[in-house]
Amino acid sequence: MKKFLFTFSLLIICMSCNAQKVEIKKLESSNPTITERPKLVVGIVVDQMRYDYLTRFEGRYGESGFKRLINNGFNCKNNHFNYIPTYTGPGHASVYTGTTPKYHGIISNNWYDKASGDFVYCAGDDSFESVGTTDKAGKMSPYRMQTTTFTDENRLFTQMRGKTIGISIKDRGAILPAGHTANAAYWFHGKDEGRFISSTFYMNELPKWVQDFNDKKSAEKYFKVWNTLYDIDTYNESGADLNNFEGGFNGKDTATFPYDLAALKNKNGGYDILKATPYGNSIVTDFALAALDSENLGQDNDTDVLAISYSSTDYIGHNFGVNSKEIEDTYIRLDLELERLLNNLDAKVGKGNYTVFLTSDHGAVEVPAYLESMHIPAGYINNGNTNKKFKTFMLETFGVDDLIANVSNNQVFLNYERLAELNLELEDVQEAIIEELISYDSVYKVYKAKTMNSTAFTTGIEMLLQLGYNQKRSGDILIVGDPGFISYSKTGSTHGSGFNYDTHVPLIFYGFGINKGETVERTEITDVAPTISSLLNISFPNGAIGTPIEKAIN
Image 1 (cartoon, rainbow, N blue to C red):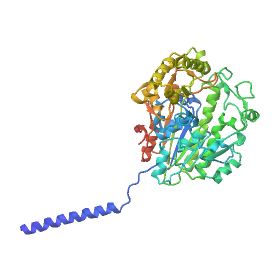
Image 2: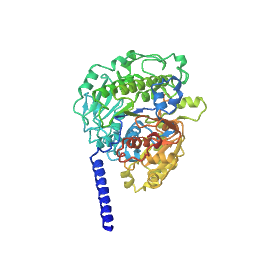
Image 3: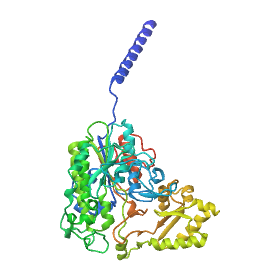
Image 4: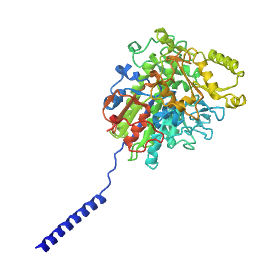
């Protein structure tokens, strides 16, 4: 009996083992689970878009542009840049790298290079040639950006099968988002050409579809009258059309509607005038849709990225200011461009197959002259008087006038060779300069570089300065102006500070993998790239410091 029970038990065990082996073989022979990803990611950066443009002009937007993204996507209502300076080059780099100038190295649009003693441009690269023009406007590459973008990481993840195309009116708006591994970046060359161009960094000649687009002179149709889309009397979210706070165009006495662009083009740079009108955004949409079609974006299982930057909003803001009728009309028209883009994505990639994010590279200050008229503290910094006073101080204090190598981007670069020749201690000179500068009108704060390297700031302007400070590229002394004070003309708006009017920008996610909802919790621009990387299940950009916005993605 015992022998029978032993044999029976052994048989049961063997049957169980065989069943497990069969189950394991079934699992091994089945197809592995593939994580679903969107077929296409479309990144939209609207140059110089303050957050309140979403809410101020909301009543004029249709249901299929901004409102479609907000109502069916995830709206981060308290999104900020987390560094100084808030310029275009650093902004685009930070959106796509998930880090700040401290790490990606794009400290401004142009900056003084301490090694060469020359100014350099964030996307400039003389080792490459122009493609599509004989002008030097194509001598560009992303090589000064020192970290990867999520577009780079997606290319690496897909073994370079996933495409990346960058498109903008501005070269830096196309090049920096597209990253180091892009298939192409294209930007609009105006003047007397009006065509999209590129660089030999990407290709030796333009693809046929780009040549065809250019040969059609697609931009020429926009030499027409720019008038308000609707009755100007209904534009109640902006100031009077005729005022003292706007620049306007050469050849027209007042900065008022309408603008006959065909008549004004010869005195305003030919095709360049289109950049400073809503039609510059239309040109970008036209070209983006041509790229969508011709490059077959979003048509296979390897995620592609289309990086679009609408730059005309920045040109118009600089010219006419935050509170202008021109800005209001521009955003009403941009809403229609977004609708056109989204409708084409629906038709060609398919609803639910793509992901969109929309943000900005910086905000903008209200025209200080206008703020002054409203009795709000604001004004202008007279660089001529300030420089003269500062030079006198340096001469009287140190007996020489060549201790300063350069002053730019609110930074002072010292001449180290002269300091050594005169046996001057760096810190002593820095402290003396700081004590002098902080006494000047319109100067809010002044810090030396050592403070940025030796102290860990977690809040306030100091933290923003630190995250924008690059040890190898930034200056020896950092200056912050008073809120509302700028070094600029008395017409139009500008940007660059760490105050809320420059840091608070939209951030909306929409489409594949995105939850519907909103948050007023603080998010930061460096969170964009980690969020998209998490959605794609790929590596974060190698310098990323941001955090995925968990509420936005499902």
